Picture 1 (cartoon, rainbow, N blue to C red):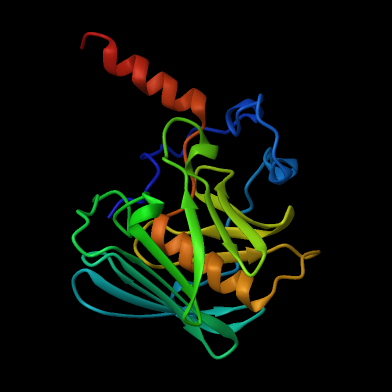
Picture 2: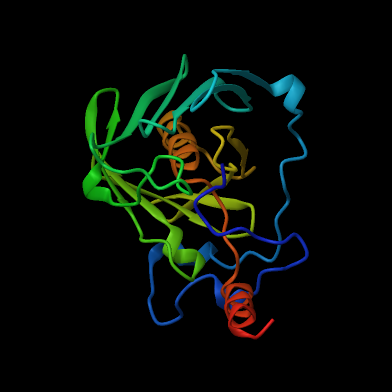
Length: 225
């Protein structure tokens, strides 16, 4: 199942100007223009993941470097994501009953009014952007307990997790429920940061094409064949 952002090609590289709208300032924007993407070579699928679940329900358990075993469960048919673990709070995200799911979005919708997010049973506010041409348009914002988080694409495969302006780490998910994270060495992520990051990456996928690549594809589609 493809992830939320549009399909990409591995030969393209991102540019500084495509990440965000230059006319809109935001405290998260200090880290928006990374020059590279280190990947997740430290993870071995065979060693790090346990997978179960037929059909639209997929469950993965990953050994997080900071927080131990974290289980991510994705039900793409019902539009439900659950993150749990002994050292992280339980985070649940689900699509409202009766909402028609969109196939390219793992949780089925980017309409925040049709989504419910809870942390250990307490309501949190989730506000996904609409997902259009720019990488920033695929950001997802969360507010809970007077704190704020953002997951926003910063490369073709990955998205950065930011809490109140602090760049915590890079998440990667292809929309199949499997999530990888590489925490920044100088960051001090908390258990709640991890649980929210895993949930958002699983629910919406990560990464996006740069604007210039999308524009080239759009022009190419208009040219006679």
